[in-house]
Image (cartoon, rainbow, N blue to C red; front, side):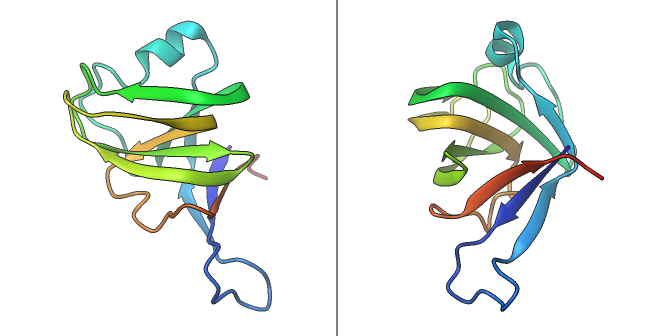
Length: 125
């Protein structure tokens, strides 16, 4: 699985939106334990990594950085559309927004991602 960013930039090519692969190593936090743990206790995150939290409904979701040792970019998504992008600091970071999907990436990986863009999870072929 990979995570693809589709820019909503008005400067689209004739072939549709600009597409960039943000991560080729995608981990799904699909259990209560993995969602609670998130990136806690990890000392590093590889450049091609994303931790994805999928939920069945849109509601306000919190992220905290307690016991997370590296800065991350967090992205809140509703129906595939980016709502918020936030850089969170180790240990002290906290943020909240509405989402049915949250993505955690290495700091800087979401530098070009903006509200209104799309994030797409694709099966690798």
